[in-house]
Image 1: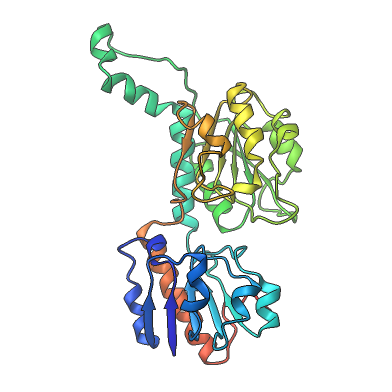
Image 2: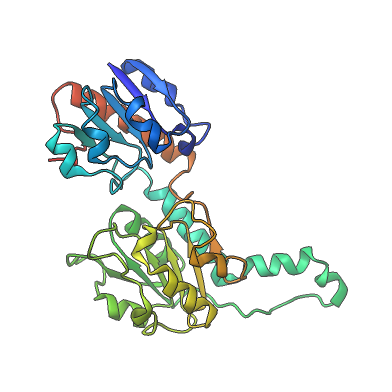
Length: 316
C-alpha cells in the first residue's frame, strides 16, 4: 500500500509522521502546489492531507486512490460528493483537538480581556520606570466572574471552553443547532445581545457562513470581546474590521481566516497592529499532544478501512 502525505510542513516539524511507515510505503512532501497534486497522487492508495483542496479534477486522475485521510476534524476542503462518485473513502479525526483549541481560546480571551499585552509593553518600553509610579491601571480591565460568556457551537471544543469559562465564574450561554438540557441554550441574536465575551466554535456551512456580520455586531455590547476559533468565513471579515475601527466592539481575536495565509488585500491588515486585536496563525489545534493524538487516530482509520470497517468515515 502506497501512502502519500502531501503537506507535511503544516503538521509541525515534530509530529512523528514516520509512524505511518508501519502501514506501507510512505512518501512525504512538505507541501504540494496545485499543479503538482495530480502527479503526486497518481499511484497513491491512500493520501493524508491537512489543507490540500481535493476536487473532481484531481480525483478523476487518481485511478488507484482508495482513501483520503484528513489530518483535521473539518473536511470542507474535500468535495465529498465527488469522492463518493469515484468510490474514494474519506476519514476525518473528530475530537482530537478539543483541549488544545480550548486552551488557545481561553488564552486569547484572557489576553484581550485583561489587556495583558498592553501592560507588558508599558513595562518593556520603559514607561513604567520613567513615570515613577508603583502601578498602572490603564486600560481598565474587569473580572470575568459574573460576566456572560456566549459560546457559538457546542461540540467537544465548545464544551471544553464552557468548562473553563465556568471555572472563572462566568455565566455561560450557548447557541447550538439542537436544544441541550445541560446548558442554557439561546438563539444567536440573544447570545449576541447578552454576551460580554463571544467565542465561536461551530463548523462552516451555508447556515453559519457570515453568521457574525454587521447586523449582529450592532446588537452586541460595545465592549464585547469576540474570538473566532471556528473557520474564517463564519464571520464577515470586512464587517469585523469595520467594527474594530469604529470601536463598536471591545476587542477581537482570531486564529482562522477565509484565506490561509491571508494576503495584503485582507481586511485584517487594517487592524492587525491595534492593541485590542490578537491574530494567530491557525495554531490553536496544534498542541503536541493533539497532533500526536490526531496521527494515532489516522493510523486507526487506515487500519479500519483495510479491515472493511467504517471508523470516522464522513463519506457515508
